[in-house]
Length: 150
Image (cartoon, rainbow, N blue to C red; front, side):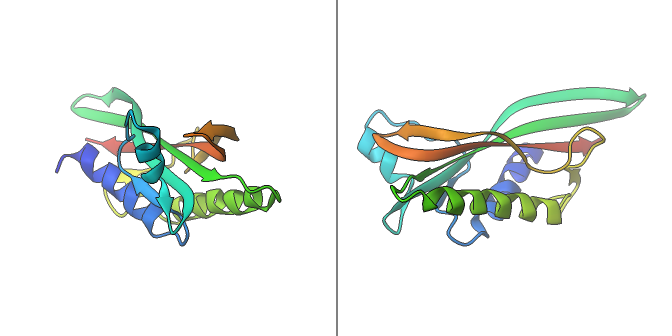
């Protein structure tokens, strides 16, 4: 398993540890059939799911013979919106539980860090309602940077 695969798996594993998180994918699923795509995000009758995707990598060399790799990860989540509005509170609760889990394990159990001077832990990049597979949903874009020193 490559470093990148290991980091991705660590992120996915931490998400799965959260109660009522729904379905978690280690990649962004693509399907032409809307119903089949929606089914990938349904668990126990509730549309609630997530995917993890690397969206950027920066590499630098602050000293001779030393490299620093910074990977930026997108954790995108969606949950069906309920008409009573309470689902927004539940979704916000999931978001904060995710942030707490990553704050509590800043090295993801290994040789990376998620804390720098500019960035610490899971960041909420955007949260808004979306239409996903014909269902009005809450959505969120979370960003996590992992730093590997070589």
